[in-house]
Structure formats: structure tokens, C-alpha cells
Length: 154
Image (tube, rainbow, N blue to C red; front, side):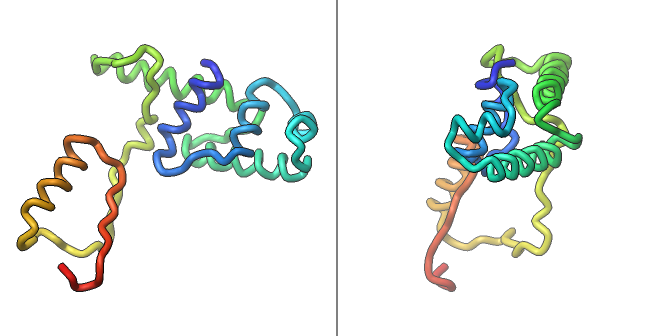
């Protein structure tokens, strides 16, 4: 797995969150085996800031992957999780559009609990708008739709 493949895999883990510039610098440089001090010197950032960014990054990945991720084991863990995912996909005989395509680890594909969200099982009018929303979400696999307007405006 290259650093680019690892970043693509991580992008899929965090659909709604992208690495900041500093996080990506830390990730890429750690992947290459560089120390925080070396990263700070090469990037022009304070060493403490780089170390703190790395710590938060490993915490984020640890939570997402369900196992402790550090700068020393990030490569092996990502490779192992991606390999397990690819084997799982292969066992289910899912067609792959790209040999290097990575997808979510099984633990991250759970449904979201909407809790106390308003029940909208009955929706009056706006048939064209409903069709458009349905097309975006179902057919075009849109990940985020925002509906804005004056409250009570229907």
C-alpha cells in the first residue's frame, strides 16, 4: 500500500471530514518514517504543534478502526484492515471497479440512529421536489443534501 492508497482509504473512512494541511503533512512524513522533529523542521511548523497534531490524528484513526494506532504501527494496521476488507469483498464476490479500490471496514458501515428526528412519513405536496431529492440520494448517491428556507414555509 502506498501513501496515496492509504490516504484514499482514510478518505473513505471519513466521508465528511478531510485531513487538514498539517495532518496530511504529518501523515505523509510519518508514513515515510520521519520523526516529528524532522517533520517540524522540514515543514516550518513548531515541533510541539506537529507532535500534538500527530497525537490527535492517531487518536482519530484509533477510534475509527477500533484499535490503537500510533506513528509506529499506522502502516501495518491500515494495510491489515484494507486487506481484510478486500478479502471480505472477494469472498462475497462483489465486482470491483478498480483493483486498488478500498472501502469501509465493516465496523464503520453501520446505519445512523436518528433518535428523536421528526417523523415525516406523511409529506404533502412538493412531488417534484421529492422526486429530485430521491434521485440525488438514491440514484446519484449524494452524501449531503441541505434544505434551507424560512421556518414554516413548507
